[in-house]
Length: 543
Ligand code: F6P
Image 1 (cartoon, rainbow, N blue to C red):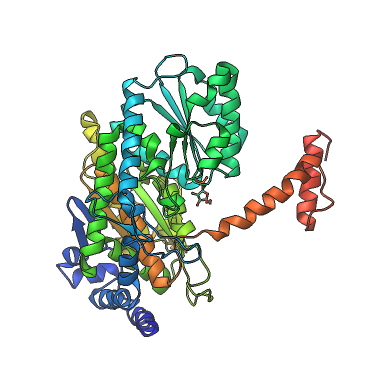
Image 2: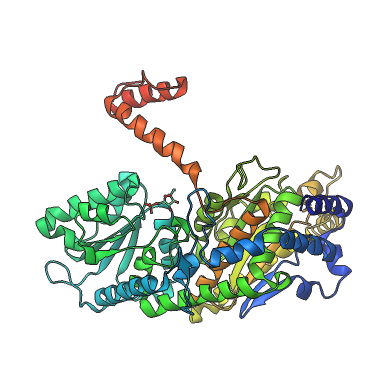
């Protein structure tokens, strides 16, 4: 394994002067050799510096790693989340084959199917107006209260599938900042509002604080009936009971579903309420297709494997520290935020499976915004900055706005223009010619220098027919498995998240000091100073 890493680095060092443009010149079949498809979804990685030899080495790396063994162990329910002794089975939630999946000798499929059926019957009941509010009116609005995986998955997906949204209006509250819940509830009528408290643990402070605020808001109007406007998505039944949510309104799941992988089950209820159970099934089906592809396709044609290898090539071999996810698809505007949790919470690790310090970088920084908006904001840096940022473009061949095809054509041309510009750049000679044509004089070459684009900047593009529920399912599953592939190559546990604990613990220690306005006991000078300043400002005393 180490030998292959070394060979990759050596190969890159020897060939770093070969530009991507030159790779295309020397290989007329480059696009087909460096792209792969699954039905209508095409993944093009030809605009990267990977060539046949480096691809061979990357594939060797994958073969030599524990990827195959850990992939099979994941799908078959082994406890691959070793630091928490848990199976990792979000794939079982979308196992449309219904073949048994065992955890400690017990088939989990019957439980998954019955929860899904319970969700569908509840969602359809609300959508059809058969399940009504305490006062007998239909539920017109749903507020999902959750954070992290209990928010990002359903909120990103509900926005992504807006053209299929024919259920109640759906809102998402995540931030403990009172502004979030205030602004969300202010125009809603409690009589017609259903509150969905989404929290696997039912202890997350942000969610529970928002849920209690929502309960008070509901009680003002409905008094003792407030509880009947609440639903819980949680595996902590004792705590949902304590909160007063009737057990038939609790949708549970087990500890083998990680928060950031949980949209496929009960945490997806708000999405199901929005688009209906049939479309939700299509969403699961799409993910299931990607799972099958990942499980059975040889690595050289396997989309998540190749996407992971491209990521490793850029991050570890080319030393690029971040990746930008740039959907040319407005409805995927929360996709980068979603991926930030999926990728950075999973692979932001500094020790390997054995607790040993890593010898190379693990997860990169993931960021991004919808394409054309980004063009008018941060693309300057992407094109001409000193940092090389591998870009990941996502685009649908067709939009939903049939009467606005002109918009979609502009979107497509912008997307393709960006990856072309990144790769081809604009040379000194071309800029000189351009200035001359425009009659602009530049005797000391200053203007020319500012207008040169270095080019040779890598990007990948994912193209799909249309952003349907099944396409979205495939897309999310693709990125989930990519994260898994990269985690295997780095030999880390992608399924725990100990890094979020310390801040939570310190926040609870600081809370009494904030309440008391007391900075004297805090552990460091800066925190003490900040506490004192905040206390003065909170008491309206001039600092
Ligand atoms: O941020 C840590 C985390 O545990 C995430 O992994 C999870 O998605 C989020 O908090 C919410 O947790 P819960 O669903 O238990 O409220």
